[in-house]
Amino acid sequence: MLIDPVAAAGARRMRRIILIVLLVLSLAAVALGITWQKTGLWNPSWGARDGVVCPVQMVQPADADQVKVNVYNGSIHEGIGATTARTLRDRGFQEGAVANAKLEDRVSTAEGFIVAGQDSAAEALAVQRQLPRAKIVIQAGRSESSIDLILGDGFHGLTSKKRVSHAPGRLDCSRQVFSG
Image (tube, rainbow, N blue to C red; front, side):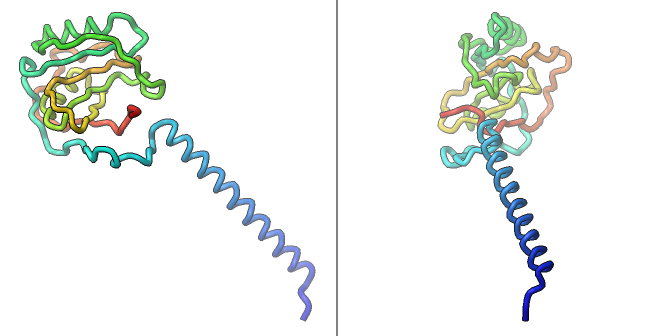
């Protein structure tokens, strides 16, 4: 039995199409993986280092006078760290260190990050209520109870004092965004 030349040509054409589609999908998957890794949306080492997760339970924010805040200016705007530290002090927070910081390019456009230890959820929430769009980063092994507030280029000021909620709530944590 002979194979029809037209059917054989159609089968070859179909194999080529399937091969091209698979090749394009493979290249797209590799490009997507590289993009996710460069932007921080995917990191194969997540969970391998510290296993810290964001608390999911409701947390009562700490009173401002019980929270020491270190403010770091990671933005291109001069003086906002010192101004923000003064405003937080005026709102009752304890003033800690005030200095400049260097953020990676991929996160520098954020409003800011609140870095806290595993046992400082209430303190972190009290600070996050001052900057609702700032994300909390929980650090494993951080024993100090002070909170680090790192301001990015997206920071445009604290929430007005009247709009700050003191009701219980959940932390809004970030995925791992810093190297190291």
